[in-house]
Image 1: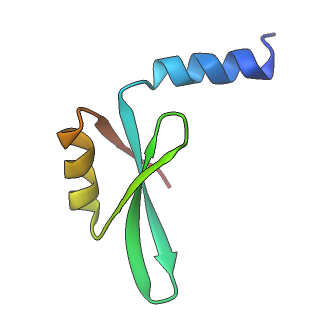
Image 2: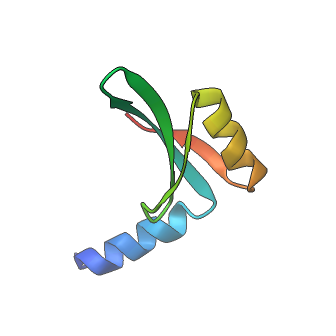
Length: 66
C-alpha cells in the first residue's frame, strides 16, 4: 500500500487543471470559494456561476464540492 505522501502526490497529479468550488457561509452572507487541486485557496466569488466562470477564465475545470 502506498504511503500517504505518495497518495497525495498522485491525487494532485490526477486533479491537475481542476478548481474546486465550495459554498461558504458566514453568518448571513454566502460566498463561493475557489480552491486549487492542491487545496490552496484561489478566490472568493459572490455566486456559484461567477466562481465557475473565474475558474474557466484561468483554464481550470470547475468541480463542485459538498
